[in-house]
Length: 424
Image (cartoon, rainbow, N blue to C red):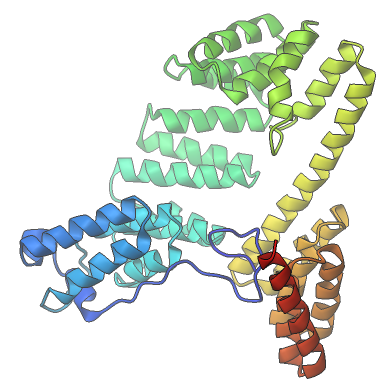
């Protein structure tokens, strides 16, 4: 199935995990040290540490981990449970940034069970769970973070973003408001409150909440969206044009201002703003539908009809991808049976997506439901006749089910595909 770094890609039955981190007693012993060079044993150790963190920051994960391994080999002493070196959070932050989830997990695991970790390390553990697709565990950990108003505000912000990204706008609003109780005036949390209210189609409440934010282009954008939803086109235009003077390339402002121009009957200006968004890959929100509306207002009916067809195709793919993502998240969390339903629903929405039967085949294979896995993989082979991953999955399946003849045939097809790709 998909990897932690790219969950939309399928490679065999096993999830491809991020880089792993070979821990030694030397690294564990550093958990008993509070600082960097001087506490860890001198200038050489400090240099190793600085180089390791620098490599990790730049995304050269293997080089960074090599430096930390070398540092552990040059230190002595034994581990002291319950403590952590000052550099560990920074290292984990970088590993999470670059999706080296296995390495981040190995480091955090040295601190014991997640619920017993220090507050900031619990926050990092929650981020790790979120990146792995285990939303329920991430939210549980975020909601249990204590240890200072700033950290609690960060945790509630992260929880709100996670809720909002999955369409749980009520929960996002509650998390953001809870964060404001410990960090009044926090602009990011205030923005999340307004965004959630707009998502919940409560423009009057959103407008009232926006007035509490510092004056900025983002506030003006929120105000423009709220005025537009309330039907006050003139106020929407004033707010959005002010925001655009500050951020002339903001896609959100272009999108909203294009809608304002349509309502004002200025279709040509609307089309100029919306066309780049509709032609993007993927198109920005419903920009294709609004561009089609602008073209119809301009009398360009054929262009509008063509764009409407493209918009419908994009909607189908977007809906199917949302269901597929939900299924893959369940798979990452170990819920194989639960993953089947959203993947089946995605197939119903977009039966021509060859990724979906490949995903389902991988799920069934893990469940040892080999007949169903074979049917799905064969369906994927029809939809994706040149995808080596499908033939690799078939070969693995036939190996597991004891069908040597079919396995060899799949391997032969795989070799032919790879040879053709190399000769291109």
